[in-house]
Length: 225
Image (cartoon, rainbow, N blue to C red):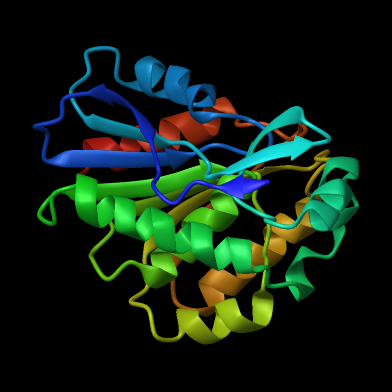
């Protein structure tokens, strides 16, 4: 496996807008995965949308398995592809998580005006990296959208949250999620609330997906920027 040192992204909307949104896709997907959400919410392209591509090109024996934000090691990748890797996220702190968080932070510094109203978020693994990027990004963030995510590297994250100005966030998680259990999402919500973040948890009956209620919440974030 190889990690791209520079992130690429799909862009949509108005590059001159004073409002920007950066959305991170999930494990095994690619940057095109979330583009339809931007087009659905903002069909006129009023805002500046960014859909970065995860830097890790997952290949096992030459067979492509999509893109990932982490892990970087092939042995961990095999565990991730079988689902076992995602069962103990709270207690692990992979180097790839911090690397990807740093890359998103660098991307925002390079591609988004420091005066722009920024909304950052993601789905599944992208939600985890969004939180990590918030810890590394030294700029105001208008809001954070976390869909079907989970707490990871809990001890370090809690410690670093104490040094980060609390943010506004909306989180969504399905009670029937078989990939990242609902309780892992609740644990993330409790961790952020405990650090003083101002947010709400959208609980829905369903699996590992992005519900329509989350899209409404995202649009509300953008409209109030």
